[in-house]
Length: 392
Ligand SMILES: Cc1ncc(COP(=O)(O)O)c(C=O)c1O
Image (cartoon, rainbow, N blue to C red):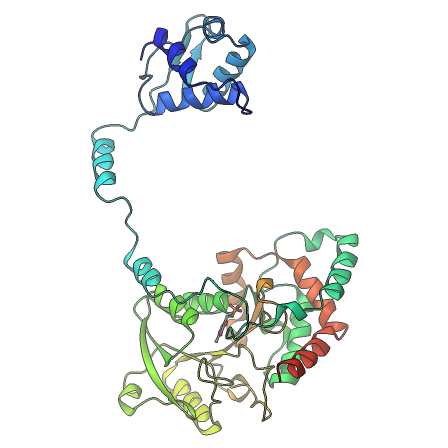
């Protein structure tokens, strides 16, 4: 297109009744003309005065458009000589080849991406009666939470508005370690707690730090779809291990080829609900100790037990430092909070603190501070007690 036709071409496309300012319309049309090659590299643009007259718009508008085109690299101007379309097309035949490929294969995702999408278990419905693993969020004590939140925002300490130091808000880690020691017999110091955005992220982090592509991972058969997806898309080879009324039940042939990692739900098998027996727990821990197998204990909803007292955590029985304990606050409070915690063996604390900061650049300290006050003021315990009654 030469510059004489440019004004006609623009005129035919401008919508003078539209709410969109003239400046934006002209700018976008000219960008489009340059990207599609209708205005070829090297073409001299009409002077701003001429184009303004031809289009019947203010000269300032055209000057503004030319300035923006220059700033974004679409055109270059030399004082006294004029404004020219810049040559920004990709070099050589590569772009032609890329264009041809684009038309043949509109989008290629990775094999693991394909598998993840094909086997996805996530439901579009995330709340309602009989949704497994989802609390009744309508009962959440929103007023209490918002009062604590307002109090903290009033002070808005800068420390709470920055990135989190590796591992999360220290007072929350202390409060959670006290809670887990008493409620779940977890052996831990505050330093061993790493705050995450939930169990999905905790598993992802553990897998990235403790396993390599192609390693074998035991999963319960059946198991939580989300955990399976995280493990599988990290390139692990999943080995499904059957469960019976005592929990995970590996056959002797499974034991001859120890995995690098095993993911279990000993307190409440997901989705079948049985509790792993003490004998099976001890056998699994001994196997893990002998063969250096990492165990991820997913203790996702242990607060809600009926009929019998919950067994203590598997982590509490582990003397060899092979268990990574993961839990979620989503089941006790509300899932959209996206907060969870992991308890890692002492010698891995530094690795996990650096790993979590390096991979996810954590934040949400304000949210973590609100939760700390919620726990320390006793609201967590009373909310869980009330919900237990209600669910019962
Ligand atoms: C067994 C199990 N683990 C983990 C999760 C997810 O936890 P989070 O929301 O903390 O990622 C669920 C959610 O339903 C679950 O059922």
